[in-house]
Length: 274
Ligand SMILES: [Mg+2]
Image (cartoon, rainbow, N blue to C red; front, side, top):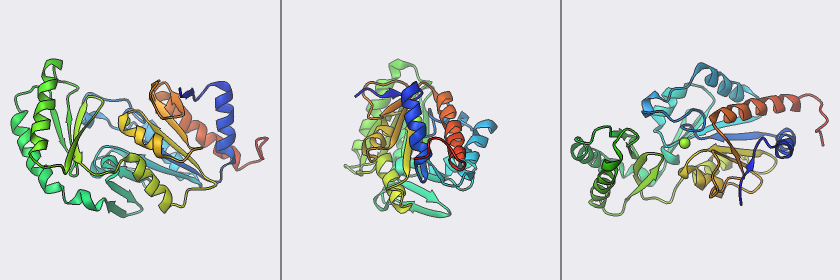
């Protein structure tokens, strides 16, 4: 089914009503390409003061729970965002952090030493390919090729396949926007991580669940979240499992502002009251 444009008049009216009437809002956000535009290098993807303010406003609101669900490592995303009261599902959900409690997927822990070896191999094998950026994320490795000449991309992919296959079936190779990733070959993804968070927070029932993402790995969450959730993909994509789409990260910001606005109304009297 094609997703609906979130700000289409009737669609948006119904969504506002839904957000207004729910007891609590559980808002889960991907980071790169969703909260901020994709940058040439991941290290440039810092949060502007304005966006930081917007996210802080959401987290300070009673009855809005905010979580960031990202492929980045926990250390990385926490240092970029620097906002308290946020929940993080990092490394595609292999690491979860909330209120000083940290959880790491037990099977992923064992793979860290293998990844260390692979990292050394990759640094050696891909040294000559200009523009490659290899990122060590502890429980996974990302190889970014946004700045690599297209003719070298198959070589990178082949090298990754070779290096990964040397280490039995405990690792798998996945891809995203201009990035290859080596991850633990464990049946675990952003969607399962979000469900774990929601269960811990006893979110099922009267709450409304919102998840916004822009890439392949976010599809697992679009697919797995309970029906009735507001799932939003950034950018129009026919093959998405998301129910809605927005055109860009700027419309994500717009949506976040509207959530605050609608919830503020929720604390006053309003004609949406049912
Ligand atoms: Mg993304």
